[in-house]
Every structure is written in C-alpha cells, then in structure tokens.
Image (tube, rainbow, N blue to C red; front, side):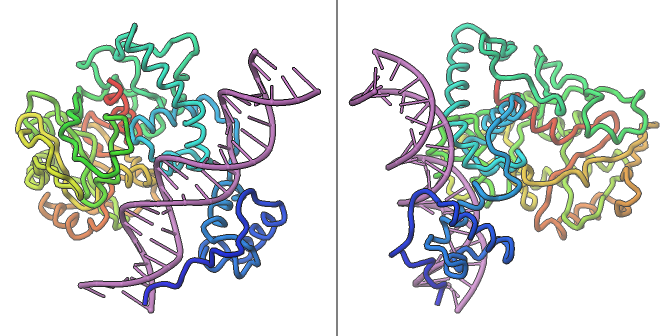
Length: 387
DNA sequence: AAGGCTTCCAACCGCGTAATA
DNA sequence: CTATTACGCGGTTGGAAGCCT
C-alpha cells in the first residue's frame, strides 16, 4: 500500500555538492530526463537523497538557468510581483525566465526586502505613497520595465487607469489604432478591504496585508475583484465593461455576437457571484456585509490568480476588432488560430463555458472602446495595492 | 595580520498537497 | 476510502567569503 520510502537516510552525502556529483547528475538527467527523483540517486549511483538531487538540478545545474546579475528591470518585476503575491517565490520565479525560486528568495532576503522596507519607511514619513515618484536618493525602486508599461504616473483615481499606451505589446491586435479610444474609467478594485479577504493558514507567514494569497483561493476557485465603490456590482460590470472575461480550456476562441449579450452574460455571471467568500480554511472572520462594495467571487471553474500568472496568454489575448458602430466583431489576429465559436445566445455561451470550464482561464475581454490587456490588469492590481 | 562580525547563498528541513497502492 | 509517500514549496540554517576593527 502506498508508495515506497523516498530513500534510505543512512550513508548519504550532505552539504556542498562536488563537481563529480554534479557531472553524474547532469549526465544522468541528460540521458533519462528529469523526474523520478526517488529512484534517481540509486540509478545514477549518487549517495544523495532524491530531494537533494532535485534541488541541485533545479537551482543550480539546469542549463537554462541565469545566475547572478539581476538587473533593475528584474528587480522591479520582483518587487511588483512580491507586492502582489507575497512570498510565493515559485510563482514569482515563474515570471522571470531563468531564475529560480531559491535565487529570488535569497535575493529578496539579502537585497530587495531591505530596500523595500527602507523605502516604505521613507515614503510613509515624507511622501504620500500615491503621489510618490519613487525618486529617492537610491533611485529605488528602479524604473518600470520598459516593455510592459506600468500604470504609474496617474495622480487621480478618476483618471485611472491612464490611457492605453500604444507601445503595449498586447495592444497590437487593434486593426485601427488611430481610432483607438483610451480605456474608459475603470475601477476594478479602487479599494480593497483586506479584512474581507479570507484567512488562511498560509497567510500566517505573510506580513504584507495587501497580498493576495492565491493558494488559499486555489481550492475555491475564485478570483477576487472589487467593483467601483458606490456602484452596484452589476452596474459596474455593465457600464465599465471590466476587461476580464472567461475562456474555457477547449482551445477555442469564442466571441459574443452582440453587445447586448454582454449584460445578459454578466447577469448569468452575477448569478454565480456570492458575497461570502468561502475558501478552504476560511474561518469566516471576514465581513459579510458587502452588498454595496462587495468582493465579487467569480465562482466559475478554476479561476485564481496563480493560475493566471502561470498561464500563457499569448495565444488568447490578441484579437482584432473593428470599432465600427459597436459591431463587436471579434476575430483572432492569426489565421492559424481556431475559428470562433459563434453563439446565438449568451446562455449557449455560458452553457459551453460550464461544460468546458473544468479549468477556466481568464483572458482579455475585448469589447468596444476597451482593450485591457491582462498584463496591464496585473499591473493595475499591483498599483492598487500600492496605494 | 588576525580575530570577530556581517553578508550571501547553497542546501537542508518541515509541511501541505497530490498521487498511488 | 484510507494509508502512505513523493513532490513541491517556503522557511531556515550553516559555512564560505568579505569586511571591519
């Protein structure tokens, strides 16, 4: 019954790896591939625990690893992701090609953590955080990554988010850039009441109260968004057309034929919204009185931020659309992409989603006058949290 | 130059979850 | 369904290297 023991603890080498051990491990994995760590030491002739082999390979020997020289852009990304995710080093590392969770963790503990702490102290003393240009003597945090325009620089909630920047890579799908209208006022999460976030055993190790504990939501499959204050959830959805939609994992691109279907679809979605977060491990200590400024829990399939971060949106985010008379004619940019599934009714679409949404991923929702890239959304969320 | 202190980071440890018999 | 264990993750440790006095 069950699995056999991982490895015998006796007679194993510990501590630093020798170059001979490294060579053996590299050669073994070159021939046999990764995985099966339990059997690896025996098969490869290493006096190491499988766990130790895995760690050595993943953190040090893997050929695609970048080591050292973490640049300002990477620093900035780490800081932003850490702001968003907390100590979820593996998730953060997943967004930094060639970097390992261990390296990022170490780098944070030895460099960034102190910088951020110092920065927070200095800004709370002298600079209103919202207006802060991060222009302290140490030039920290470093400038935003140039390839992913951040939503910094806005000074007024009402102007948030700032007009879309034409250099945003994900905006490339527009067929008529000259007619592109800036994103209208959107306030997906103008404020977040962290007391409404569910408690989690995991969060005990996280000191940042603004952090989304994605793991806590994994089981309950929820993406938390708060609508604009003073607006009902539905009204907010309909008037501001939140740039997040849902896509089933069937590999098909789907479109909504008519704008009116949006509100119908949202009606359906809203019927799935609950005002009481019920994640695994929640002790119910959150505030349930959220009718006017509620947390929307899109309890549809498996939506959670960590899944989003782990997703490759390159294939689903680029759409053409022509903004003529709100025709809402969505079509994939690439001719290689699968044909759109046309729905005659939003209920069909939702039914399809329900059928296929064993793992629903969020994608850009492209609607008239709105193209809100997912990366921008993430940046926005990070910015909100920074406020 | 030597001893002590600090920093850095590879490796270890323990825990939660997923997988398997 | 249950018991058991592999896997993966985050926290922590310990030793090497660098710095300071």
